Length: 551
Image (cartoon, rainbow, N blue to C red; front, top):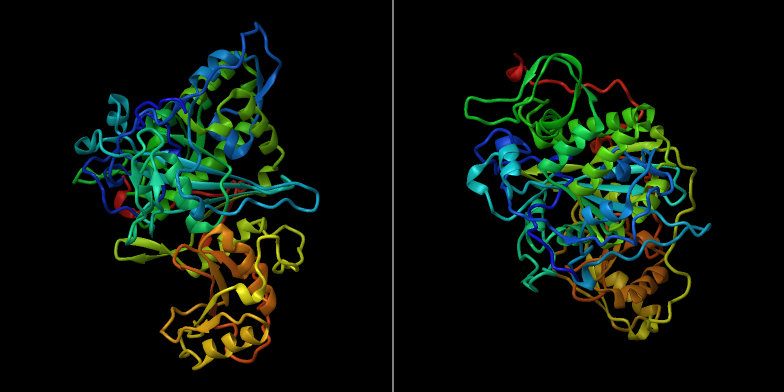
């Protein structure tokens, strides 16, 4: 693996979309979230240089290229231009995809009946103040050279048939346990956290591959690629794209007497923003709606949707000079995983993404609730994650798919029932009902009768579970967990990987409070209202301005 440069220079998709209720705000007012944009970080080039591919030719075949690699990855927008491979390939930085342990990784996504597989790309925005330019744009001088934070995290999911695309953002202040990660450059091991930490701290634990590992552990969604950008990268890309129209319902100035705010100053109505002003829009927290990072995420989604519409409708990209400028900015601004470290790989990806119609692109935010000044996922978040795992379109326009069930036959690695140890817990309590006494014992006896002679009831109090679940800690026990689920008639979605258990653990949920025959509840394949979905084709979106920031 090539030696990586200073990780902070790594472009991060960050403020090209930031979102998170942040309370660890620095003192400056221009950062991703301005001063409110939490810690800063160092970073460096964040990755290893991609190598050029072959000798240059005067004219390469016509490439379809998006206004920015980021835009391409997000929206598959394309234009035509002559690009010099060797030079552009030399601009690309790359880094390892996943720095976590195998046991924490999500299972590979399965192909559909037509042999097609979904595509999941994690977009990361780094707040690194590792260069003079990033320091000037990000502020928070006291954090210069510190570990970078992944203040923007968005999962881009492209359906297996390429008919639709979904984007799921998580607030940077989301509390969760971070997995064990190993820095590929110096071999430093960051142990799994005992308590919960903020999601944005994952980037400083070895690089973007740890943020990928954190996402897989949280969501159970397999990540295929990542792309990362930093402050200066956002500005250079926004300049190269040209103006992107954004809308506010009143004059807004994101600035406080204490020096907080992004510095964004716009008049009521629609304005084309680019360069540093685009970065200010993407980082604005103070001034939009309730002044939280959740509102900032909404503004970022609006910007991305508007950018998609602008790029796809614009004829400006037919200019070879503009395309060269875009290609230069894009390849210098991002850090990618090793699977995207060449122009050809990015072109192939863009070719896939451009098939998705604008009206089938849906932007969402992970449903959450406040825990003090931070947030945590709600039950709706798991619904959203499951829909992505199951490749269900978030715009509700999919045809109904038959519900999946646990594997009908054990895989080659699965043991016979008598060899499978199962711990059974009672999680039947609800907000309004106490747990049903004896349920763990009843279902343990049911398993024993079915040949699982090593099934035992654990009568200690268990956390309430809305639906019955079979958890397993590592990939080598997945097949056995599926055997248990099948024996009880549980759906495939009830089998979940979790490092919180040491062996196969069945938690009898509130959906199975009586009887020995499990009846699966109707599957909800509707995007929760709490995900605040926005369709990319909706041109009526306009950010509401907090009256306290009107000028």
